[in-house]
Image 1 (tube, one colour):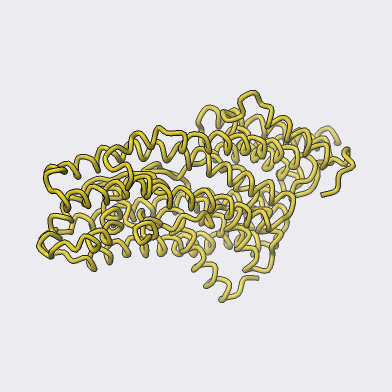
Image 2: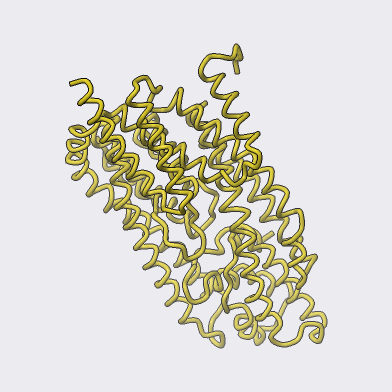
Length: 247
Length: 228
């Protein structure tokens, strides 16, 4: 429980040298206490856990669970975990933890929660913000807590956990809900945006052009800032055109 | 009009937002929709907070603040944008101008994030396993978190302070060049496009996407006799 709670702040000392290395070490300090390691073991514990660790923060508890298990096994039977194995495991596991976690959380679950919240905001106002927090809170609570248990049970064999349906099926369903919410957001923005309904032809043209521009820019992996600037530029052109037509 | 207390509360809130964005606990109360709503509540202008929060959230809904990727700090930028728009009179054109001001503020936040990464690197490099204690490790780690908070406050105070001065010029320029209704239609069009682009690869078969769009569109347009 203490490790999982500490893992909420695993990125506090994020840096280019060891990424979340110090965060991982601070999260694992309670393990040192559970094992009642003698004081002279502390320096080697710090050395084992201060190298590179670059996981996704939401599934880092999977790696922490596995590392805690390896420390536990090493303490019970030193021959079962050879010297250098924990350091090697720690370094090698961070890439798959980062890529699977980023794919699940940053690419799927975050847009899912954000779009559910945005549609909620378009329909109910401030409750949408609460909805975003609840939806994402449920997802991250589920993964942060259970990942530690899964990591503890799997030990060094956490690759099988990362490839399991536990990390795939929720992403699939969340992706479908996110897509539905994106569609709903488009429809709602057309008829009832927070800035008011689209009543003039010029507004419809501005909306359509900016919509197409954003789709094109982001599908080409351009930053969203481009979509914003293009929308402002397009709105200026449309306003000018509308003025000319009226005049 | 923003009072001194509003500045203090928003600067503290910006610190929490910056910490939640990169350092922890990453509960996503830093997302523009939530941060904008809270900033609007603090300033007593919930409608403005929601308007800016929703628009910024939709436009940047696909942005990923992961790993060492350089990203615009739009979360603190949203708090800043709400403060700037409120100080400029909360009119639609002022709100749109404050969204443009979010870009330099986001870049400032991004530069300070880089400084924070280097600061934490120095903290980590100074660890000597032979003579370090558990308390010293936790303190170093905590210093990184506090730095993230300081980054948020500095970004907000610098960005909103300059924004209050720049906003009238931006409002005058935009007001002369564009109709506010058309501008907001464009901004929400960009938000809708970003939302679709962010989720396009999930919508295999497009059934959920099209179905939801059709039902919501028909309902919101008053074509379905459904009351929720």
